[in-house]
Amino acid sequence: MKIIVIIPTLNEADSIAFVTKTIDKGLRKISGNPRALIVNSDGGSTDKTSDVFLKTGTFFPKKVISYNGKRVGKGRNVFEVLKLFHNSADYFLMIDGDITSIETGWVSKLLNPLLNKNADLVVPIYKRNRYEGNTTNHFSSPLIYAYFGKNISQPIAGDFAFTKKLAKKIYASFSSDSDYGYGVDTLITWTALLSQFKIKQIRLGRKIHKPSFPKIVPMFGQVCFSTINLLSENRESIKKRLSIKRKQLSNMLEVIDDTYIKVPTTKKVVEIENIVHKLLKKQRISEEIPGSKTTSCLNMDIWTDILCKHINIVLKKKLKKKEKDEFIESITAYYLLRVLGYFKEIEKLSAKEIDRLLIAQKQMLQEKVGKMLSD
Image 1 (cartoon, rainbow, N blue to C red):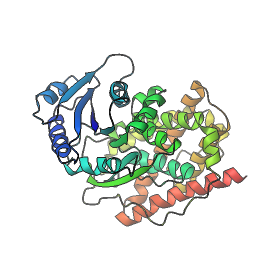
Image 2: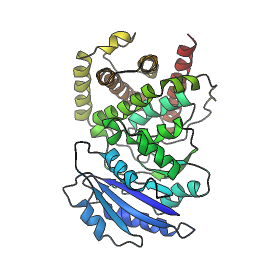
Image 3: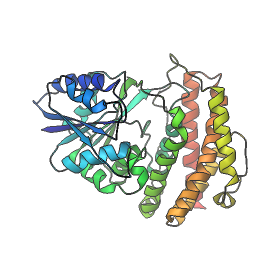
Image 4: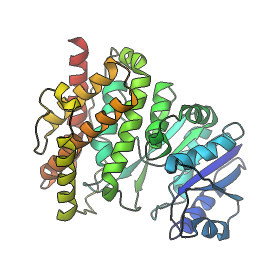
């Protein structure tokens, strides 16, 4: 039994040692005397991240992978490891290198469902500050529920465990530049869904790492592009799945953690508003989207309507690269307006009320997708 641990990094010298030691301790608690290799795949750090990694004392051997080229990002980090080991390793564990809250128990919780043959992909469920996880809450998770009928709470969580069989599929599925960046999490989860692999979700508590909100625009753009690319390339298969009856979601996989609330700064909100106005001025695709002329914050009804109609364009025809780029600019503007609207909505809500709001948004999108299919 060979386990490859992937730690993708870019300038994580301040956290890589702790992450590595914790993973190493966790691996020692795995039954069956596994052979494990901890791999730091680095995208060009300038703070000696890999040096710190190699100097960290561990029981299991370590390896550094570095690379050059135009495509640099988290996805490229993952790709380079899979290129070397997708045929030889039995299981893969992927953990971000900037996590400061990682615990030894996370390793067994993520790997055991694979070892026990209960899953091909294990996805964590983290507790989150109510202002975090916007791409997940308003885009990735609702789309998966609408088009696959699966309630995956955090499909782009950043950390995963998967089997050799799925690893081969993931490795063969890299195509767009976004897959080599922040879109890799989408690629992993969607590859499992499209190939009908078994997916299990595991609660891991709170993930504390470098804040992603300052990168909300480039991150969403790459996640969105990978999603749209997968939708476009698999549109016939996905349209067939839409005829399958969906189960109503009775409850949310409670993720809101009100022990820690960090409100985005006014400066950041204004910055997002300025980005929205610039994107809206460039709109072309919005002419095909009824009701998308708004420039104010969006509620869930308007957002799910716009999102549904955008996706319907993708399912109708295979988009060219230029069309995809225009699509991303269009949907990014309305996504940001939804995020700003959501921030206002949740200001005085309890954690449970926010959970209910997010589940209602998923169900609303699913209903509109179903209605559009029947029209």
